[in-house]
Amino acid sequence: MKSFLYGLILNIQFFTTIPLSKEVQITDKTIKRAVETFPLIGLMQGIIYSLGLYLVLEVVYLSPLASSFFLWLLLIIVTGSIHLDGWIDCSDAYFSFRDVQKRLTIMQDSRVGAFGVLSVIVLLAARFLFIYETVLAANLITYVIILFIPFLGKLFMGMVMYHLPLAKNGGMGHFFKKAIINEKPWIYLNYLVLFGIVSYFIFPMVSMIYLLLVGLSALAFIISRKKIIKWFGGITGDVIGASVEGVETFLWLIVWLLHYFVMV
Image 1 (cartoon, rainbow, N blue to C red):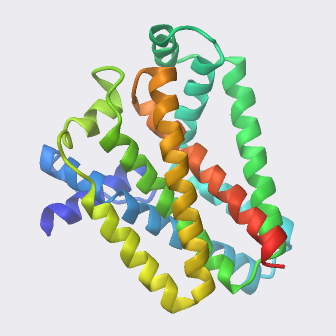
Image 2 (cartoon, rainbow, N blue to C red):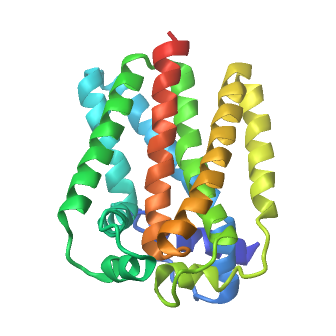
């Protein structure tokens, strides 16, 4: 239990800007626990996002546009843009249209290219659109659905680490991967089932949306797994970060479509 808590603390320190000064010894065991608790740190982020949106929309009574901008900015602030850096580097590498080895070299370059800048602008603009039109049609169910996005995003990140090979030794990807070699993410199934049961008791419609998002996340993983190996030869820290940004933006797209066409 202690190592499980330490793993969660490591995740808070690595993947959020939440000030937590607790010193944790970094060992293979605590890193393994950190990977096992990825979905929990995602759930924590989701709670922050949902409460933040509820506060500005229902308590402070900001306009939908201002509330959307607040939530959009909160997503960036809480994560410290750690995954956006990976999105930018992977975009530069992918749009170079070079071979795998050259793409890995480009990702190691600290300079940002034009494709990286353009791709992150498109990503953030699209996400703002999805958030804004979701907020326009927001209801109580919306605040619960928002919890699912970072929860599934971080679970997706863990699945990528468990099931994809390393593209190279060294870096953040290797740091986490070496602690979970030959491990299976059975604990993720427990999270999915437990969260599904809880969502059903909150409201049956919420559980249906949850199952839809889980299914689409699984489909995204199946497709991404083949593409990542083809494009980059496996995972690196940048590829892992890009995968989180990609799947969470995809889930925002689905949530927007649900609000636009179904929950009207």
